[in-house]
Image (cartoon, rainbow, N blue to C red):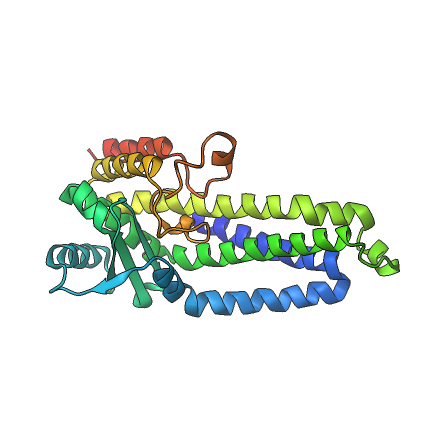
Length: 287
């Protein structure tokens, strides 16, 4: 059901991009945005993982560099029936982790030095189980494409706004595209709708990864405890290696301290309290 919902939301996001292209540039704009959407899917499929790892300053490690971490990832991937992913470490004292890769055969998991010091072994296993579930479900590719679509829609909205400010030409074709109503929809409604859709996709996949992480590590309560600790650090210290473009990938939003009140409504992550409650319910059902 989660995958059906995600597929429908992705289709809606692509349709929204094409519709915005039509409002900005008529039939030619819609066709161009359709081609752009195909190109973005291709680019995200092949290159999103390497770009994210470089942006995060992650360095690859092997069994000799980090024996305990490497063995834990190896044990969990065997339990999850997945190929061994590449393992990366990010040098920062802020605890967090993410996974990337277009499919299980080309996957990577990255953890910060801070998370290895802040969490107990069982808690770290829960976090890695969560990330491996993302890999198994191909969530990273979905999230990357959704983020790219949302960014493209926002860019088109900004272009339309500047065109209106500087008196872009008015014509019969503009009337066909909806006139002032279409312009307002492009500038205001479309980016908001794109953000909401991206948020819905991300939150749905986080809940599924929490459940899978609890199953892989065998202890949902350990993952719940890890989430609580990571959020505490995220609220008190910003992770310099993270960015708005990559925040959806981390197990806890690295900007939790800045996403308070109204802004939290548009967070790419569900409320941590809700995630913990679900994990506790999962643990109770396993007894």
